[in-house]
Every structure is written in structure tokens, then in C-alpha cells.
Length: 247
Image (cartoon, rainbow, N blue to C red; front, top):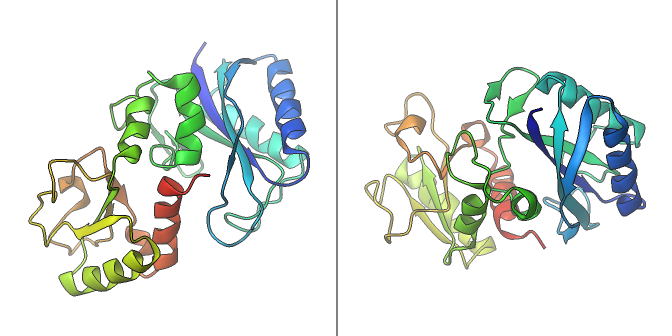
């Protein structure tokens, strides 16, 4: 049976009881077995849509369902537990994300596996590393534990790529005001060489097809395509916040 990993989150109502009930429902499904769960950790909310802290965790499932069918089960369970999908980053009683489905890589309209943000979000990686430390991320090709360790390196290096130097400088100035402890730089300005021997934790590509720096030219592990958020600095802050402020 394929090994699957899901993330669990919530900040409305009795979340611990909701988690337990959700796992019980999953384990009772004829084609799903709950193998192991992480500890639950309290985390800070990302963005400003809710001020209430979240409880987060991860679970290892074994399933004979297809990835699409498993996603459908997870989404139905969320709805049964009272989740209403209206506000991004908003309050919710239960959030279930399909992170990994064996070593499959899936990119369809309705499903992306591995989950596109699981490799840089601390509130996902911390509990996932507890139960899947040696599991290889099928796209980044390093272990979950190694992905987590990269985010712990100090100073945290966040590189912008694909932007004209003037735009990059303005964005970096704004980001430094919010995160003075982070080392920001521009990929183009530094000549594609990191300021130290340490590889950046994240390289956020904000380019377009006309940009001299292409997304595919960037190092595989830290690159992150944020081109759709070129004019949305708040979304960039959310990405950075999720990689840093998990508790």
C-alpha cells in the first residue's frame, strides 16, 4: 500500500478533539490505515486573517486509493468537520493537506503533489520531520529532515531573482524593515553567487518570460516560483513568515 503523508491544522473549536475524530474517521475507511501521527504543536497564524494560534501536526497514512480519491476523502472530512473555504489563511476547525503520496509527482488542475509549499513551511516540516525524517522529497531530492535543517541556518538567507535591480532594491528595503534579522539579496546583483558559502534558504523567483534569469536556471533546492505575486509584497511576506515564525 502506498505511503501517504498529510498535514493537519486548525484553530477553531476543540482542535485536539477534532484531530482525534478526523484520524478515527480516516482509520475506519476501508482503504485507509493511520500508521503514525506526530505531536501537535501550537503555531502562529500566517497573515492577518485570524489572530488565534493554530494547532498543527502530521500523519502517516497507508492507502489503496488513488491520490485524487484520497484528496476527495480529505476534503469531504474537512467539510464534515465544519470547514468553509472562503478566506485564505483564515480561521478553520480543520485543515487537511495531502503532502506526499509515495514518490509520485502530480501536477493537475485539482491536485499538486508534493504539496507545493510543504518544503519551506516550518509549521508543516516540524511535525512531518518527526514521523518522516528520512523520507525523500520527490522533487527536491533530499530528506524531509534536511529540508527542515536548511531553514534553521543563521542568518536566514532570502534571495530575490528575476526582478530589475531597482525593483529588487525597493522590495528588499521594505522586507528588511519587517525582518531585520534576515539577510536579503538580489540574485542578479550578486552575480548568481551567494554572499557566503551557505546556500540561500529560499530563492524567490519573481520574474517573467522576458526576465534574463529564468526559473529553471536557479538551484533546484531553494528555488520558489512566486512570479504570480510580483505586485503582491504581502504574499511574499507570508511565504517568509511561514518559513520563520512558526511558533
